[in-house]
Length: 280
Ligand SMILES: *[C@@H]1O[C@H](CO)[C@@H](O)[C@H](O)[C@H]1NC(C)=O
Ligand SMILES: *[C@@H]1O[C@H](CO)[C@@H](O)[C@H](O)[C@H]1NC(C)=O
Ligand SMILES: *[C@@H]1O[C@H](CO)[C@@H](O)[C@H](O)[C@H]1NC(C)=O
Ligand SMILES: *[C@@H]1O[C@H](CO)[C@@H](O)[C@H](O)[C@H]1NC(C)=O
Picture 1 (spheres, helix red, strand yellow):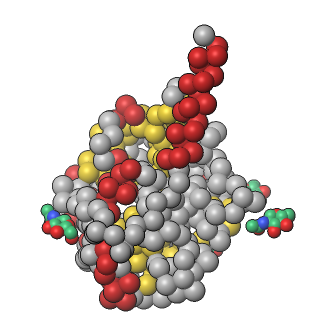
Picture 2 (cartoon, protein in one colour; picture 1 turned 90 degrees about the vertical axis):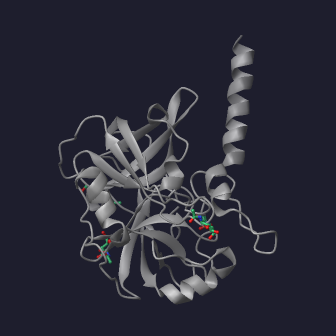
């Protein structure tokens, strides 16, 4: 019996390791479905903090860890942002096909595995225009079972106005528990990296083989690479210097590669949709 259980656990661990291998879209193959990649590898096509710094949750108290059931526990799956005492904004590719009882939200902690609170979700609302082939409208709202109390480890992020524009080159912070691409840098502690917003047309050109970027997307990253969000950061916050949520980590060509910025869901494009569905 014990042997059976151990074998089962080992098998599950192997599956988890395999599922964690980033898959790179191959532009020269027949046009791959972006979201097939995203959905098969839920913590993104791409998506942890590369080249960043550890931060405390008090520096980004809107950051949450969306966790997915795994055997008898829950495991970090994606990031997300508190937008009120009971609503979270994340990426639709993180929640697509998931049931509320498979997910939990850990918040109020700098560590994905401990402290803070692990909370149940009442409702998942994926954007109805979410397109699985090009990641258009990659937004999802999660309602917590019960509203939380705010403190210095839990606060709502500011939302932009509908249609609010952001300047190319404007610096933003992106945070998460995703891959650091460096075995010396733990991803169990929250990390953050500063990245500049990237010109939309340039970004669309770069990703033209994948259908380009749409109006519901915004890009950020350095032309020289090296600093980026990455696998496991999906759904997490991209916040500008005024503390406004400009983007939700969505997709991109694996992380921190020169000339490949990361593509984020453009929050100002769906501000009304957020209000309509959450009242926030
Ligand atoms: C987190 O906060 C503690 C207490 O304020 C401080 O000692 C520590 O250096 C901080 N860590 C980081 C990574 O900012
Ligand atoms: C989804 O995106 C694909 C690729 O850009 C496009 O061909 C298709 O028409 C889109 N579907 C919808 C429902 O907009
Ligand atoms: C990891 O740390 C070791 C020892 O401090 C160092 O020699 C090595 O270069 C580091 N590796 C990376 C990828 O930073
Ligand atoms: C990013 O976060 C760091 C540390 O919390 C802060 O010093 C910096 O001003 C932030 N940058 C932006 C653009 O918000």
